[in-house]
Length: 455
Ligand SMILES: Cc1ncc(COP(=O)(O)O)c(C=O)c1O
Image (cartoon, rainbow, N blue to C red; front, side):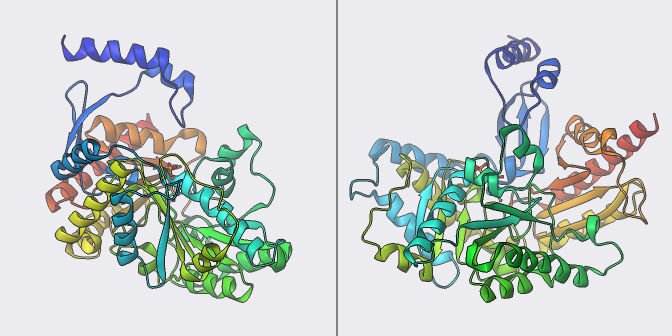
């Protein structure tokens, strides 16, 4: 069967039988899906044979790049050895134990224990229940309210979607649940006005203090935030923000949860975004890069000051999923960490390749459509605007970001559009040549987008 005919067949089957996540169904039905068939290194291939540079590492996760034979081999061997066993009945498996220890080695000081899950959403639901349980054990049962940010993304479970701040993820589902509140974001480009970024960082941190005082510190359980907001638009906070947030959390006895699902595992140039931003969290949920996206696995790390309280409880910790510490996923995650260490990928993004990524992307700042280029490690956002000086975007109805994303895809580059911010989060193995290709293709897509806007 030729590629075109097979694509048509697969598209028809996909349209008839598959409901996609985060999708306007009639739009997809009209257009048909793009079918990705295989991948190698930093490139994905579709069913029509197009080779596309994956500037998003899948969905912020394939940090080691595609086609890692060692990961395939450990999965195969573990499936033969022991494909599954649970951790419910006072049992454990070798890979889950080894992975827990490997994580303790790379986590910040004071984090010795982890609890496993299968996705970032599950990890954050684990965070919510564990925090509620912690405050019950501490004899402060009123401390149950969570604060997060309106452009924070923490997943799609009932709890984790309530932590997530985007209205479009709440309204169709009657969320958020009670006891979940949201504050503004340290998003200087959009909301900083005439303030300089440092002054704005303090203002944005002040919103947390104001919200805690409004709810009453005796009722506030935790503040949950990504070191850099990923799905909210790669919002890199001003340098003043995190120190102030941390001071506020400590002052009011509010736990600080650093959601490392995107920032963890080398994305910002350290194992943890918390290290890059000098944050000392109480709890760290992680997923994605934990297995480089090769297996669905997540974890929540608890600082000893929390873990000691949970571990001392004589009541059953009645929480956990079938695939907790799944041996195949754990073996793949363990091998991922080994490879990262061997190849120095934990810090690669803060070395010459991160500088190259930043410098080459900065050349786009002169483009008439570009309002700002911001990067940290191997994470970037290029804001497309109508008015550069005023930092003013086009009206949302013009769908500039989506137009640009389509031009990128057609031109052989995956860039994600978040509003009109064009986002990159390439595999950590990306080369200088691939960065050049990325920037050249992005510039071409910006030209085409300008032309579409004029037309
Ligand atoms: C920061 C953050 N937390 C949690 C999640 C949810 O992870 P998952 O999609 O694996 O449930 C995501 C997903 O993008 C994320 O970016």
